[in-house]
Image (cartoon, rainbow, N blue to C red; front, side, top):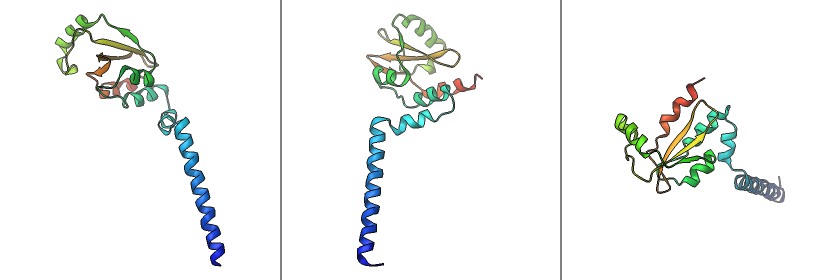
Length: 137
């Protein structure tokens, strides 16, 4: 093989690889590999569960809503939650304070998802407590 043919092959390979990288970047920009991985899950419950593991204490209500949808916001549950906290203190390591709101997300599984927010941020969140939501079947 001559040097000219070898250079042509290398150039063609570089064009193919560059095109592949550009296509992947455009796909990630407009659709997202993270979203694709969620869409490949086998059931709606598993999609919700996968999204729950993307959340962390301190995340904004906006981020939570972008992953789980629009919540019903309950601002009048502090006393009820304080009573519940007294019975299960380990579930509320950051406590319950006046002004906390509770976000209810409807879900395809039995019941729903309830999360606590303080000053617009997620608190007392542990995704492991939702692992059992796939076991209701």
